[in-house]
Length: 214
Image (cartoon, rainbow, N blue to C red; front, side, top):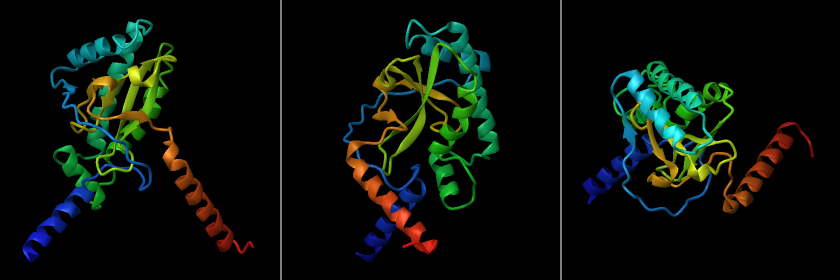
């Protein structure tokens, strides 16, 4: 019995240290794994850019092909640069373990999205909109990525670009086809609004006490 408990505790520890979550709040969402595969290309850079461009232009007829190619090139290159900067250790979950135990500084899924977004958003594309995205917020399987849409197009009709899944070798899949229930990163689920308000009130009182205010 003791050995079983030890094994369970070890498994739980490994799962927690391999997790990819942002902050420890948020809410669960009901979801179902669809098993839909994502696309990953390991060939020459130009072939990757061509295929990703094709997928982006397929999101909506209004997306300019030249802009899709610019974004594709920048996203693939940036993911590869971050792979080097993060000093990736093994598969994505193994690197998560290294970050969460202090052996690496960055490389969790939300950090990939956090570091890629500003540079890609700064491209100033006129027919493409870039979104931060999160799925299963607050779950052990919480995941972050980027979503590409046409301007003013629904987030849920976009294309997910995931640099974390294959450790810097960019992967992509339609939001509707993904196994993750993606939502805009800045969307706060209604059921969490009260929890956030209470947390903010707690922090306000803590600051008042620290500053000696009544």
